[in-house]
Length: 504
Image 1 (tube, one colour):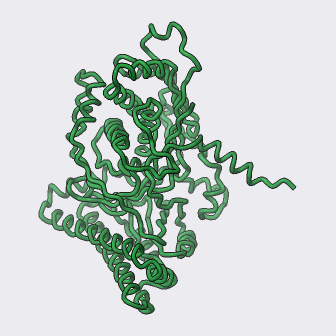
Image 2 (image 1 turned 90 degrees about the vertical axis):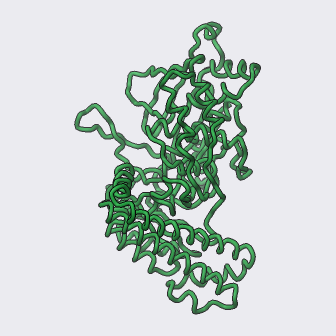
């Protein structure tokens, strides 16, 4: 029986750069873009002599990249051996696999260990697929002469193939399709870890239908996914992308990097089971509070198509600036931190007002969605609607302050955190009817812009963006985290397609 797990991509709305250091918080929204991992046995039965080998077979398939990789997994040492002729390695999946099996070893008693061995001897067949939203299809849309609209994106087949370019050396292939910055490696790692831990009987994942309760079992998924993701990328990042892939939209404060020192020391010969046992027992001190956008608000993500930015080099430049000018950088960070906290407060106030005075809240949001911000207060009726509009205007001011300080930091560090082209686009966007916020997500750069709109005003923003050569992606907020799916999403797409065929 196949196990299918999915994890969402993310948009870091506030906390760019600051989130790298405790105790700074960031608001991260999980999205409807999901990565899927499908796990099933490779063989129908255990061959009589397989016990003697002490190794089992693992097949990893990535249909979108037309890649299939074979491995041997040592059942004793939990090491992976590459067994394919191609050099198509995926370190994120490799560490996810080793650490998930090691977690089972660290947690299970003797009886469960015997069951685990039998299950592993059937081999592992792992398939990974990501929603189109993780990748940029601008070039393909333009090549086909289609307009830069979400409808054009929707016309692509789901889980579209990602063609590979031969580099000049002829030795390496790189994806022709750029990424949209939704954290595909974190979502993929989390989906693989979650599917494996569920398949091996270590955890019981929440299903897509029951909304996914926070539990100790999800904490195990989080620890293993964070560790695998850090080791695979060769650095200990803030971890907000993995945390949102596990738990969904949230306010996040990072963990202390020392918690995964055991995994970093693994090269020194410590048994894998012991390494992961130590990581599971470590003091994971990250902080997470549930957060999502208030009702009647829509997250929009736009792709200007001005080329990508490299997050590691931008982070490096900011750190260099902090060292060279500690006083000025500390001042900027303090202002940024204050503005981030105020924005969070105003959004929480709006959620509470929606809960307590829904009719007034709905009226105020519906009215504001048709007006530019300077007219929002004019038609507010009664104290509750005035409170709603005050909180909306407060949130707008906070975001303008965040953008101002992010630009200041970029100029001081000599990097384009909010490049001039993005500034023009964002200023145009936030001056439109019904637009609450606009900004550059995460570390900034040329990759993307986001907007938060009120009521039904997003369709107008999409049209204006299209006229400015900006492609609105099919991405919106979905506060769900990791989830057990009822079937292979590709089968669902086929069923949907068949049910939409009209027979006359």
